[in-house]
Image (cartoon, rainbow, N blue to C red):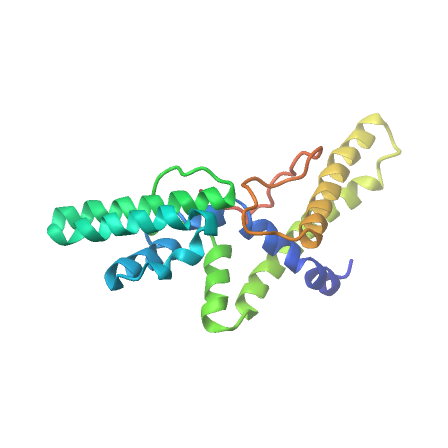
Length: 217
């Protein structure tokens, strides 16, 4: 097993796998996420163009209407401002998620635990340094492949001894193949904005998560 080769070839795969699923979509729902940050800026400056990149072109009219309504009401008082802003935030996130093929389930509070991948991806863009992000992903790739590989390799040597040993090998072999296949498929399948939620591939059960690679939603 060549750790260096594994790290270099699989980093992109695990990065796509970690960031393209539910955590990234939820990131757009949070009150401190990039969508709401831009929404606050748009309302403060009166410039709806700031948030238009976050919605599909065919939905631009809906968002402009919501923006105009919010702008007309929010200056009437503190309570009106709070309600108008909330209305615009919810409309924006709903329309944005429709473009992702995902349902709108309400705004999420600020400070949610998004796990390490999404904050690291955002920070890499802010700083212009992808080094820490790649280090994080490489470590998880190495840990995952090493876990499944060592388990399958250890049981392979005893697979021919008896039926029970053969079954034990199969139970380690199948998750090993699925994990590697998932990495490869994600690395070689372009992800377009608008991809729906959910990981895995049709016809293959998702392997158990590698300890230390998942986080609570």
